[in-house]
Length: 377
Ligand SMILES: Cc1ncc(COP(=O)(O)O)c(C=O)c1O
Image (cartoon, rainbow, N blue to C red; front, side, top):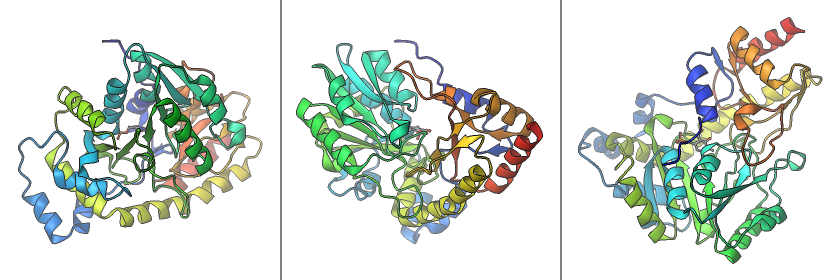
């Protein structure tokens, strides 16, 4: 098996996530305790949790959980759902099932690293850069120009990590049409779907609108429940699901039974959780904007479309890498500098950094960041 390079983002988090005082770059919404989640449960859901048998569960995922996940789509049934250990296992399975050494893959850049390293470990891949001068949008003509006869998979992610951009609907539909014409699967990482300031317009889930679309979902981000490690792929193509299920026998085999019960509760109470998480975003996002307005010499900021992340530019003379390093080492404020998103598939804009606005405690972090900037002036 090809050796995979270090996962820069996860390596950085391993070093700092639980050490830095102010985590100002989280991509997941504010989490809750198990007690809070169980307090939301109906008596039946609570009984299902208490009575959960601790044997192996079905590789595809518990049938009632698959039904619950399917209910978040317009046109899917339990048969169209395969569960995974987090979104990460789904990304691994989709790339390994759809691609072989003779294939070619397309991915947007910058990106969550597994979306480019996993195809690159199997075959040739081309990066299509999102354009910072066009609200981090995707140029569909560039995608068309990069398609080869052996292109099998295009991976997208909107709302996007790290920019929070959402592709305009007409471009999304044009991309689907283009891929349909060439028989290309689209893996859409939709794990931030539903998350964003109140009123955010999210895209239709790809499994509902494209017969070769793979909708990647998870409880980790919009729901704020990454510890559950329950992810899924929805797809109209049940043969692809069956191939990924057979690969899952080599991976996690099945999900954690207790987590399946908790995920069912979370998804059944999706509206309540999203309302709560988006209210935190509504409160936090203007605070970042006000912060940047106080420091126009140091930052360029555009308000993101959705998710709980943004990717502003740092304009200070020492550059973003040195800025982020001194910020975390001296003042305990964790951001993700642009180097985390460097890619082997082309240039990514330098001097940007990822910030988060989905968690409590932003005021304290912003005060620490402000004090840091003032003391270094
Ligand atoms: C875009 C994207 N996809 C996938 C993942 C992995 O999600 P999970 O923790 O559920 O495996 C992440 C985690 O940060 C992510 O940002």
